[in-house]
Length: 126
Image 1: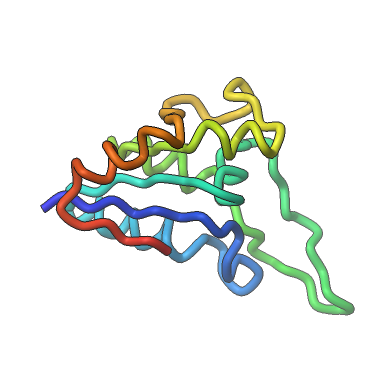
Image 2: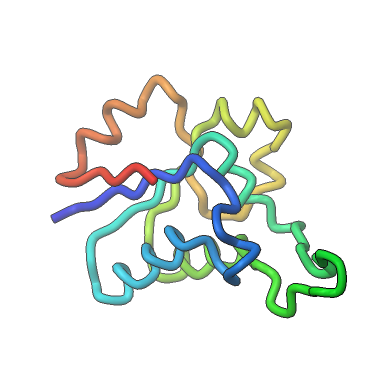
């Protein structure tokens, strides 16, 4: 069975945790040798910009000791041969050039999303 995880909301629960929960779940599935791919769209394409740093995040006296390193999670997924795709138009709408993105991510036009989804047995929208 082939599974496509689609993430379109960025930084969900990353204040409480070190990782995006869907990226973590995708890593777990891949570690169990599941045939899984990741598609980032909407604000989640921000995950592809490696020059992010949430260090120093604080609310009053509380400081986040383990800030999220979401781009590192994407790198780990790519290293495990997990296909990572991003919607070209969502990158462009946010002013993110492909040269600013982690190498190895495949940018796809929004018009091709139907064809991409058709390749998978299961599509999970997060």
